[in-house]
Image 1 (spheres, rainbow, N blue to C red):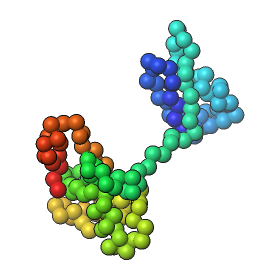
Image 2 (cartoon, rainbow, N blue to C red; image 1 turned 180 degrees about the vertical axis):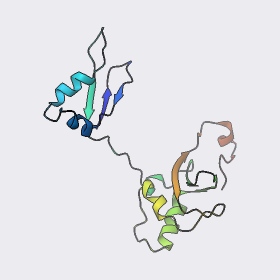
Image 3 (cartoon, rainbow, N blue to C red; image 1 turned 30 degrees about the horizontal axis):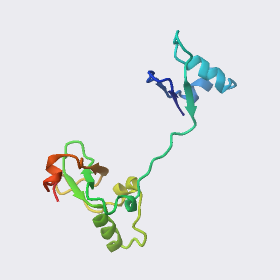
Length: 151
């Protein structure tokens, strides 16, 4: 549970540990009482602290990234000392998944790291992380046909 102050110049974020609140005897307390205890102590205005039960999950699917020339997926080795990375387009990743036997290759980007088969060429690790890289198309290098990442 994450509380965010919605006042225009406040950046306060609180994430209370509800288990500890119950241990300390606040289990029967109302949410409005909890908000009153955690709010900003602003003199000029009231606090805008609001709690969302769960932050919204923003998920990108591979189909949303297809046919975008300025988007690449970066597969990085998750080992601490290893810096090995690979870049691929969403179309290439979907084709590879279809060749591996997945009928519906439209996976969420978060799921791609667990679908990686094979070890890292550098450190032989098997843990991967996936990031979506967006190139800035307003740069002179992009307009002149330069490549911001390896192919």
